Length: 175
Image 1 (cartoon, rainbow, N blue to C red):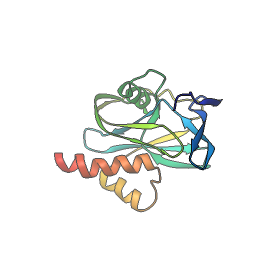
Image 2: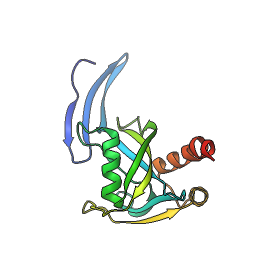
Image 3: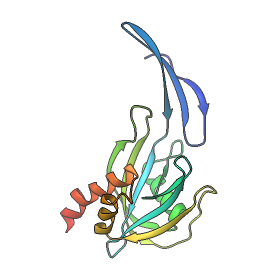
Image 4: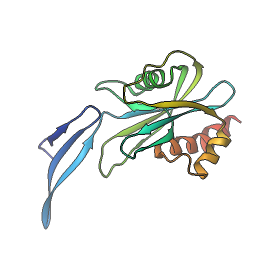
């Protein structure tokens, strides 16, 4: 792959990169979104309830229930980004962050890698949201979150994946 991709667009959240691909029978221009990765946080209170955000998403023009999440800054470690994003968006600081798993968000069009964390020992503080973050917070039981997934109240893929992982592989083991 020798040559570096061309920068088509440089943005706050991601860059668009382009690369010419050559293969037997032709060639094509491949354009993809480049990211430093994102941290997704599953905040669980002392009584086992999960903190969800209802966040307005401009691209789809509606609010979604989601787990707190945000992009890693260049050179930032995933755990540091997870703690920072949780504090900024919700005001809560975790006493403990436990890595859960990682996955690519949409590998056909982006190199973004999600790093999922369980946040426990939540300590309430003050949120410091970005100007475009319009959200409200809600604690729910895991059972309620599963009902919200089945009822299409939770439609965000990263949130669904993390809640399902927690339900199947974490909560079941510690219950």
